[in-house]
Amino acid sequence: MSDAVPGDAGTGDGADGEWADHGDPVTAASDAFAALGGETRMAIVRTLFEAEREAGRPVTRSFSTLFEASDEETTAGFAYHLRQLPETYLQKVEQAEHDEGAPDDEAGYRLTAAGRRVARAIAAGTLTESADRDPVDLEAMCPFCDESGLHAAGDDTVLTVACRACEREVLALPFPPAGYRAHDDGSLPDAVDSYYRGRIATMRDGTCPECGGVAETAAEVVGTADAAGAASASGTAGSGDDEPGDTAGDATAARARMTCTACGYRLRCPVTLTVLDEPAVVSTFHAAGVDLAERPLWNVGPEWRERVVSTDPLAIRVTARVGGEELACFVGRDLSVVYTDRLTPDDDGDDRRSSVGAGAGSGADQSVEQASDEPEEADAGADQPSVGEPDSATA
Image (cartoon, rainbow, N blue to C red):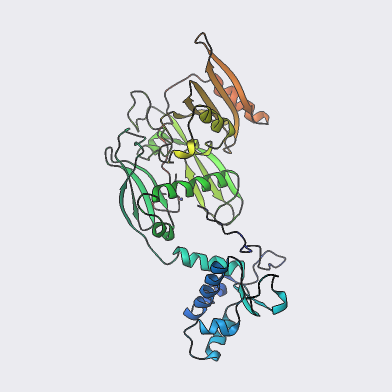
């Protein structure tokens, strides 16, 4: 899969900017960034942000308070820099406008939502820092060779999980510098796992975790020759006596690609990772005493298989054998689970199939019908694309 979501309650992150009727922003982007081009101006933003963090809510600080916190020698020089910060970042507030229960606030200035986001980007080091981390051994087995050689290493804020045994890369994901600072070697892998689980789920639901825009989701078919060498984040690599990465004939594999229509943020991953929070999947694993949340994205278990069973319409069959039964999720082109099927052995040892859910629409039914008529074959799509952001070095 190529390219956390800490929230902050009570900071008033709303739609604070005004927009013209034709959809263009009132403040040009070049002017907005140019306004931050001075240490005094950035210090004003940081001072207000630190005050908010200490108070746990938006606060207002007077001209004199902000001046005393700056390095400017004269009030005239400070006033000049304050005027250069447009309403995009600062809001002037009168004493009467303060919220009740905030006696420490003065008439003065407070951050807008945009100002708060700029301050967060500075605190996170997203635009100003680079972070590295020496290799850390991981407990999970390699999804390709099933050896215990997995390790994670950070290079220029990109965390890479790879296997020493088979020398294959499983995933490469950017992680903010603040995350490297906040987590030690023991907690860093879990933090990255949680950060991207949330992003996958949010984008699959149609919302961009970067900007809140509309995310378009799609499954795409790729030849396994193209996918060979790319690592599996879902633990679906290899089956039976097949060697990881083996390809045969014109076999195809699939991967999920999610793209924001507003900011262009993109995320790709094995299709398996998009169904982990499906109710049928969660309940089946829960009944077997397995919590999928405890399994990292770089290997969610050897039970999983992916197979493209129809290309027109596109249908990907994602299966897991757990608790004495096989659960199959049929995923459509838009990454929706259009049908789920459960195969359970009865007391006589015969397989008994029961549907546990179905999607709406004739296209979904047609996908499943075509899929069920397909002969069983080797997991041609087992060798899946690696986890990573296309905008990163793993594109």
